[in-house]
Length: 129
Image 1 (tube, one colour):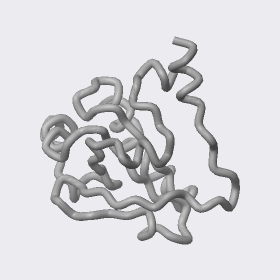
Image 2 (cartoon, rainbow, N blue to C red):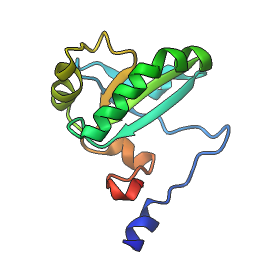
Image 3 (spheres, helix red, strand yellow):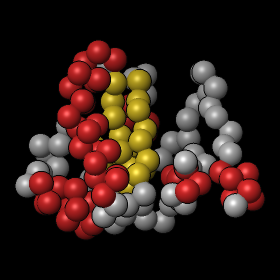
Image 4 (tube, rainbow, N blue to C red):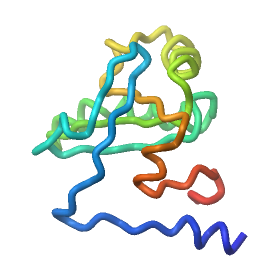
């Protein structure tokens, strides 16, 4: 367990450090990149699985607070899931009768964990606690 914890320690980006760019797709197959948000404040939020009840709760809490958060901070929010686009559709959007267009921020799929690796985000639930 100690080795897993040590592996989860990440090198944080410093103020002014460029964040690694990425390109991921949403459930409509539209590609989104971090570069599209250049010059803006971005909250990049990572989630384990669209099927995870804790992740679902967290994403809907963020959705409920989005307007106030985005307005107050002039902030773009990007949510990245380890799930496929189909699972994001099934567990996040369709389970709440919400469409991608109705969701206030972008939900991206990264089942190969490429962005997780670039940002040194652990894929293990206990590693993130």
